[in-house]
Length: 303
Ligand SMILES: [Zn+2]
Ligand SMILES: [Zn+2]
Image 1 (spheres, rainbow, N blue to C red):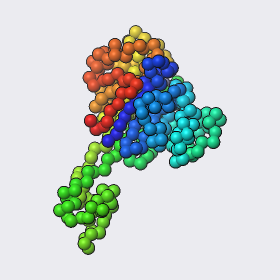
Image 2: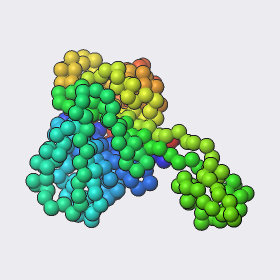
Image 3: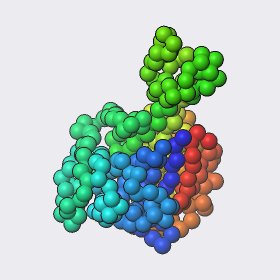
Image 4: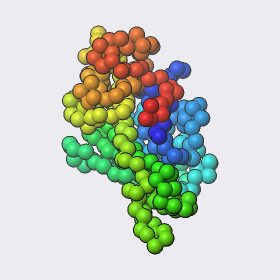
């Protein structure tokens, strides 16, 4: 199971109705946070999320609305007693940017491990965090900006009836479920003898701050949930949004349709967009399963 929550859905500036866009993904007590703008730690607390569960932070790019909340969040993690390493991944230049921010948050009680992604201009870069596979993809914004795809790999379900039929002691179940052979009564028992078939992985795509282009759809092909930028829904302001290298509602709906996503949440709204729902019907003409994200929207996958 993967819990996905948007604690914030605003672009550029936090407002009284929206914290800055970020995304929390958590499975079995291990959480990944994408982006950390001003006030993100408050947005997380408002959703009763456990900051101490954060194992990795993925930064999309270095515009302030995506990273300026980092020193405060790191200090809070320290205050919560975090001592285990925190992985921070993001575009090339990450370590320099974060170390500059750390001047005002020195002496953290936990080590930071940096992972700089993407020296190249195209392609996909992948790394693993436990049973989560994290892929990054380069977008088209005013500076290097990354989209992410998180794939939760799931172990096959343990079938206790099969195990009982083989007279396997209960204390060996865990070992078999972890994928290891066991020896019992002079026989070798292999995991496939007690596990059911493979389970499809759960996939979530996330991107904001980009002009829309079709290769994004290839990157997020078949995701269970696509979370994508909807800077504005009003076609009247499209040119202005494009000039600033952002995406419109209908453009992200098109990406979701091309990708065959199961569902789309829009996020990273312009501060000038008071009521995203006003343009929802228009986006749904392009992709029926479009939803306007809001602070606190959540889902547990698979549904
Ligand atoms: Zn932004
Ligand atoms: Zn930006």
